[in-house]
Length: 92
Image 1: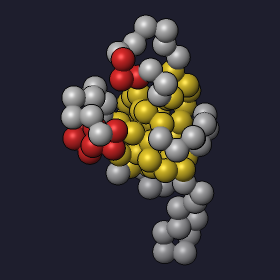
Image 2: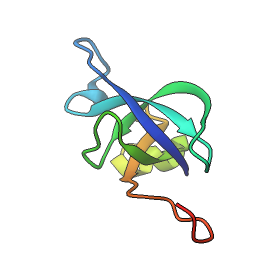
Image 3: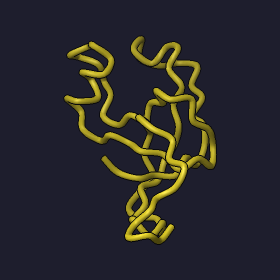
């Protein structure tokens, strides 16, 4: 799992049947200190997050597909939590 920031909502009129009714966002992975790390990618939202939220993502295809109960689902990254704060050794 990784920390990420929700950057934008993805809206698509033509999509794979799996994505019908799913909310998708562009997210950027973060380091533990909050710096942006890596590229932007699409994640399916399971926790009602929104643009600007600090979230916990699972970026593993088989686990993501298992969450949806569909072995063939075309999904790799899922938002699984909204983070209130990160507390490392007493520092926020």
